[in-house]
Length: 141
Image (cartoon, rainbow, N blue to C red):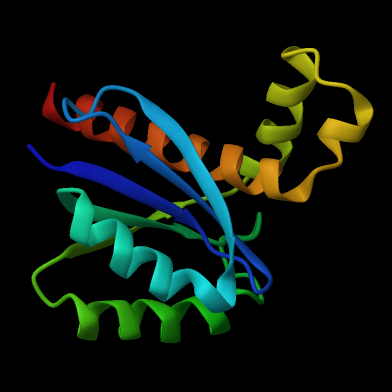
């Protein structure tokens, strides 16, 4: 059974999360510099069975796409051309950074750890993936 992989795509860094094989729990995997993301994914996808990639969809409160969408669309097109058989979906990422900060605070992380943007991105990807999997479960009921 393949895993789901989620990306919190940013212009500098991209947070990555992955599901367990049963697709119940999302776990933070890593954060990579965005310019190395395709190389990282190539290596990861050769080692792991991933059936779907979920990309955070940056929307504003008025439901319009945020500025980052102009970077995400070309990346997703490139990803689709490299992996034509891979299912790639978007999932709303609104509030994930705020939720990531709250999660870090609730976990009792020190202020210096909470300021670690790479950790925020990884947690954000985890929140995106967990939300996506929850939405699938609700749809199937």
